[in-house]
Image 1 (cartoon, protein in one colour):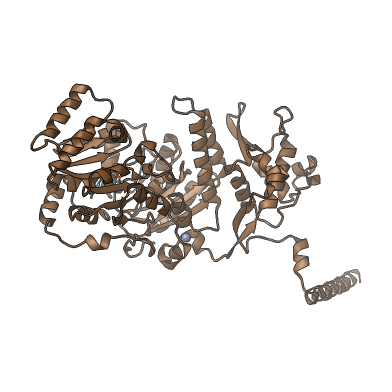
Image 2 (cartoon, rainbow, N blue to C red; image 1 turned 45 degrees about the vertical axis):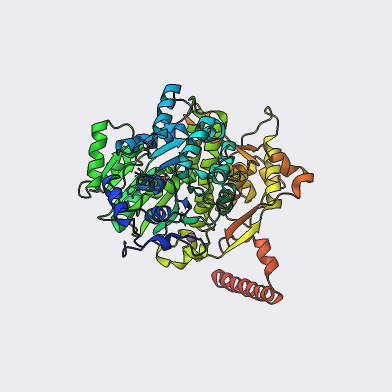
Length: 618
Ligand code: ADP
Ligand code: MG
Ligand code: ZN
């Protein structure tokens, strides 16, 4: 059931953010709001936008960290329109530049771009304009290569600077400056010179990469001290994250129906599905129970798509959208109370964005993720079988890794969901913060089970050895073994197939008897993700279905080589009570008194049986 709207608290206490200093009104406020409404046509500022704009207009250097889609561009575009001179925006990609330029031109903001691909005469025209007494552009986009190599540009900047018309440098995607970032670009390194050459020209640095280390390095590389920081936690504190095992799709659909009927009667939600077909099936199923559900996917024609969007905007005619990820960006409905993934997302980043469509109004909302091993195999198979220009081997590997990461996230029943999600964006988030606000605590933090960390290094070594031994390293001698078979062997299953194959005679048989099934699967999943094991997808032609066989991974030799073994450590956080002990271990833990009591109980039982038998006999 939905409770009171819940006020968003964006920041964890230890993040430095100067936002609060710039909430108040300034002399520029009236004209600033005027431009905001009339030029940009916007009504309300997003988090930290107004603050960053104020700081920039007050003459401070600014560092703005916001998630993708948070609205960083406005933070420099609005001051640029108000400033006297010209703002230069450094952006790494031509496509990003053209996109922004187009948008600004459509709003009537005088801007241009000096990219590598324009003709000499086009460039000359732009330069002529900028040398004018009153330059005809407010914003000029440039690539970092231009700054590095173009003397013509340097002369222009000098001229503008001397005439007091160089108002600001903006570095978009500023993490490219840092080698610690995920997208370092050598051409960005030079940008630090700008601050030396053009003293007193102000800077705005923008990024969506949150690691404190990258942040520090960006400021260092850019030689900027005393910047005002506008930093926003990526935590969505009004969202409640939950993962649930899926079972069959039909099974999951039933669960979803029950969930909607019980908790979200007149509320809106999005259900993310695997395929167009699954969207249709899900929508039809829910509609047959009188839930106003519609399918939305790339297969719809334009008019149908517009129609669904319109209905979605109006709560009365559509409550649930069953969508593929084609249902994206433009549609910003504030009161989405739940997002359900009937099919796993393709990456953690994707999950963050898709689940993030819930609760845009700040009210408490739920994110359910249904997961299953078969889905992992199915999605992996799809990636492998894809033949397009862009699906190189390397790109496929990244996509498969992303998928495994999501699956590990799902299987993880011990660590805080927020910690896991935010870790991906480089944000250290304490689970205490998640537990603190009871109403929105994640499933794992809500669990009453205590967790503990298990050192699985030796076990992992044994597992990799086991797989190597079973499967063999050469291609010829390959024996096919599935994840579930390995789990069965490790947990000492008495399953007929296991016994017939004599797997119970292997050294590792029963070595995970102290762990429950999901923890063993998590460990195996971790070993796959880290490259110690490899999951080979094989399509069975006869059934047109895919199975996954486990083989030694690229890094298997590290684990099996005694020289390297000391350097690895593999740990798993598990729920304590769930780890059931083997009979043997239980026996070991007993005190002498326990053992004495056991003996007495046993002899009483025997005596009782004897008497009963006697009674029966007579
Ligand atoms: P970022 O660079 O942080 O990824 P953008 O600046 O490209 O994000 O903005 C993302 C989208 O949000 C754009 O479509 C933009 O027009 C929109 N947007 C930005 N600020 C606001 C606002 N205050 N109100 C409504 N939409 C906004
Ligand atoms: Mg951007
Ligand atoms: Zn949590």
